[in-house]
Length: 472
Image (cartoon, rainbow, N blue to C red; front, side, top):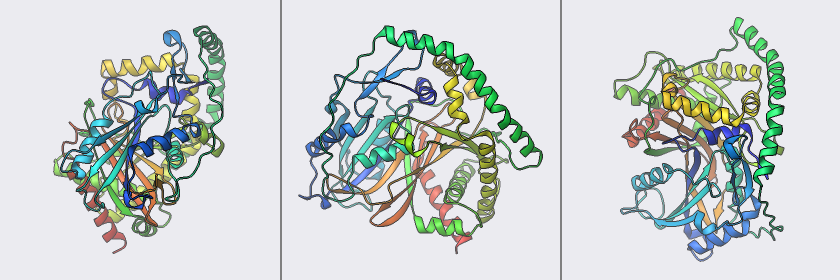
């Protein structure tokens, strides 16, 4: 029995009506590399059954403390049935990219059940008319609640269910499965003890935070750091609907590297933020809605140590930075974003990488839940613009992956929307066919982005113009 961390519980309590807080992705496979040139649904189901002991995500579900007096616990589900979690469906005709994105958005918009292990997997056949894919490909769509997994642990999970060669590896015999049934008395007892500890933990957190705030104050005086808030509201701010759209654009890693090398000190992430900035600028210009001041993005940052990765869950810091969408020239915009990134990182380092993690650990879970629901019910969530979008960086496997012998040839990522932030974008780097690839995926509220295909074109045009301006 493992209690959720404060940050894990925050993602659970943030799930209000119309805002499911799960993450996921769509992976596409070429069956021709499989031993028989075909992968059957039963093979995938059998492979997952043999590997379910390798990750705690598979079989654990939530046990809630009576009265919501403490953070929930992860417990093994004695009634776990993998056939409930893994479903087999077909892509509607004509089986093209548009239909795949529509189906992915529809599945991603539905919340996960809280009385089951919080993940679902869909094996999707019928990808027969997707440009650039061999005929007969299949896709695998994964949904996992954010309280159980973040992008970094998601990569680890994907490595568990894949192999590095077409040959299917043997995971070995699983250890004995021990099912623990938590009692109400035990959970209430722990909640009582935790309530007594909270004031001391809060005082310790405040004491430890004072030096950080002093460092920030001094750094602000000399202009080294600044904390940005989104001053301009865009169409991506406001009430989020229940409906989603998704899309993606894929770029060659060496081309992105060449772009970042054109600006001394810039990073791959700076180059991708410049593409995002140009894409949002073009999209909003077309709607005659581009603000005069820069758009601001929130950037989650993984702060866990290597030893903490296997436990799952979240350990995420956060920084805001300007996308410099107020600059028209792509090369100048890249240089300005690099400076914004340096300032945001300096602020995060001065504050401490684990500040957000420690803050959520000292806040009682029922207080977090009440705050989120009150902000939603009263409209406070839409009253403040902290950022105009979220852009997160998720590293993929640096080697080719296979699912039951089928080669992974493409993937797009799916993210959650937040109150007042209706556009979530994910930078995912991976290796496919021995070539480095960077995929920029986006999830958006359908009411705010009714034309996801056009936004994908804006991202492509942004890349083309940035490459021409920096590399030639």
